[in-house]
Amino acid sequence: MIIFYGWWIVLACFVIGLYVSSIIFFGFTAFFEPIVKEFGWSYTQVSLATSLRGLEMGIFAPFLGFLVDRWGSRKLMVFGVITVGLGLILLSLTQSLLMFYLAFILLSFGSGGSTSIVTMAVIANWFDKKAGKAFGFMASGFGASGLFIPVIVWLIEAYQWRTALVLLGLGMWLIGLPLCLIIRNKPEQYGYLPDGKSPTKGKDPEIQSLEVNLTLKEALKHKAFIYLTLAEFLRFVIVTAVITHVMPYLGSIGISRRNAGLVAAGIPLISIVGRIGFGWLGDIYNKKYIMLLTFFLLGLGMLAFCYAQNLWILIIFLLLFPPSFGGTMVLRVSMLREYFGRDSFGKLLGIIMGAASLGGIIGPPLAGWVFDTWQSYYYIWIAFAVLMGLAILLVLKIETPRKGEV
Image (cartoon, rainbow, N blue to C red):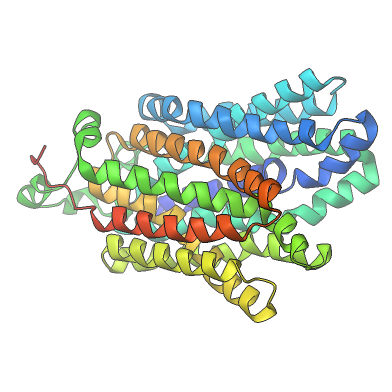
């Protein structure tokens, strides 16, 4: 049995995404204490680095979308992998707060060039009817990155944080650069069609003429794109606030730090179920209604989070929130691929992710302000559950674009 080459691309993107996200996103918490201890910086000063990363990606995402449509994913991924390696080595040489921030900005550019928009764009080129499954497997690398965190902790304990960063930077090059060679931008250049269909069995011209492939200008005017972007903005406000504040919140309601840490680690790992499962369902059933289901479950998960002091309610939260959170990440890109086609996919995804990143900048500080003001997260979680209701209404209003409609 010959495996369609697109699945090798999915595997390469999975591994690169796992490595990058485990260090820069989920694993950075392991470097937190050693850096504070050496330099005496405050938690706020160190935390600002991650905020700068989010702000920069919010601005950079639309630009990156234009680049990936123009240059292709392979060149950008090589650039991204090299830049991540350099950023990690620069971070290991940190002697000042300014240098620390500059290293994180470099890491932000590198991670943007080697994951997210760039990897999703190449998957969108290679898959059509099986896009949901492909996106789901590829995005599972981000969830599985939680498994790599103990390795990072061991490296820091064995070699100190600076040497650990150098080793991780070199590892990025040794692992990432060969995997970049697997990436191919479009299947047609290598005698394939999306999903592995043979060019000799091409689609009937009449069927092909009915396919939706909107231009950037047409898509930006379409209500479906506007509603999807607004829904993603609201979802990211909520999700980033929960992920950022999960441990402080659970600690504030009497749950031990050890158990709170297990919950925090469980969110990305359990999200793998949703990334694969809901991606698969989106290939079988109407993606809009599967998206509605994930948003509804996300809202129920937020309600459960309000009463997480009860163990059984906390388990319900873990059964609802992480899978639906993972599913929405996959469905947004598979819907974008199905509704608007391939030609402007990178640009459109960049705009959506830029808007989502702005939501990610708003959510965590807002939740923190509510806790500082009322000494409780309860009111903000209730408000976010209501906000999910608004996001559900936006998804309900999404209609499939038709060719020639705009």
